[in-house]
Length: 107
Length: 164
Image 1: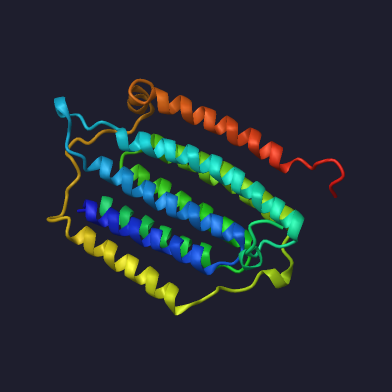
Image 2: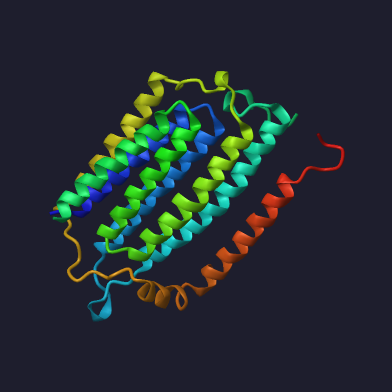
């Protein structure tokens, strides 16, 4: 039987992998991919919680968790579009996407 | 039966995520990321979140994946920039501590929590009923956010006069 704990451990493992990606990769695009992976792991946990929610009045479980994930995906899409353009501008100006080379706030 | 699918897709998700963060070529990373998101979509189906599973494939495996691949190809990394991983014992320690703490928190949740009997089916109708009644204001705010992101992206990416 798959319980809530199974889902949360899976979500935690994937989130930790994303965390490792953010810390270990130097390429800014890979760092962004790792952030997406962490968002995705959090989404999985939220949907799992929704399935294990105590039913409201009438014995119905409201789909609030799934609605929240819907919003998260929309915001993630907006975020990744802007972030990728910033990465492209970075490459145009500095000719690099290595995060170690971009230590200044202005140039 | 559920358990078989859970373990199969969970293993696929962890494995493809591991390959995403460790692949040397960013294009391989993008491909593995799509596989990871496809496994997540399958897991969403196991959680009865059918609409979310479809959106996951459409938005992540479709739109975001294309964005990543486009930028990877525009940037066109040369060989010397495809370096390996930066490894630091402190990072392993941080990630390990995080995972241990998280697992302990999950264990302290108490006895195994079973799914709610006759839990909701995340069909488009059920979701739309909630989305367009209780959450209609956040929905509109998100649409404005997406418009702002679109305009911001276009303005940022435009080459100004006199710029190479």
